[in-house]
Image (cartoon, rainbow, N blue to C red; front, side, top):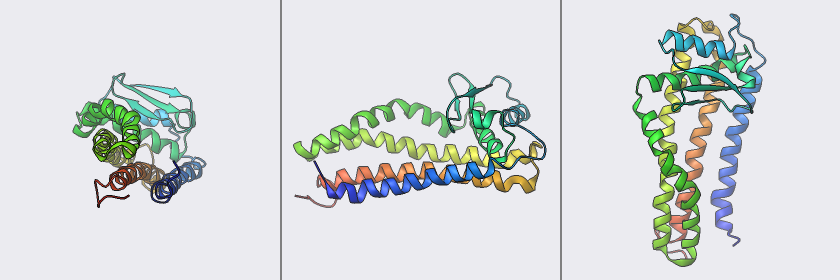
Length: 229
């Protein structure tokens, strides 16, 4: 059904917030992809250097297809870097690669939020695929059904909230260690900082968008703020 409240209070704000964050990331990455580092480290070499300094020798660094599809997989201990990052010696590429190396360091040191995030993944997947549908159906059935859907969908929000400290910590490690490891000079950090700061906003945007969705269904069903007939 056409619901102007959903459009005004969820869809439009969500698109603005998420779209704006995505544009900032692309703008920052594209801007500093043209600025090469003085020492010439590529993204793959920078990640390898950080892992070596940290004494981590069991992580494999591999290239992967796609635009900014960089990620670290704790299960396979693979650090996958996108084509724009793997072989590039730009400040943006080094920043992204070192951020992902930060996740590998979190894994090696049993960083608690990373383990918690991994544990929540199955519940978040169920919440994403089923929770929303249950809430939507509940609006036509009974507020109790919406409540059940909200509980299931909350796993998505929990996952995203736990993701924040994981991502912020990986960024902090990258910013600090990239100079200590001799990968870039201190006066080159501005490009890395701006790229990673922009990327961090996407995780904040995801939390806000999910929260808006959850609040909409709770308010629309009358479970929060009184019944809306």
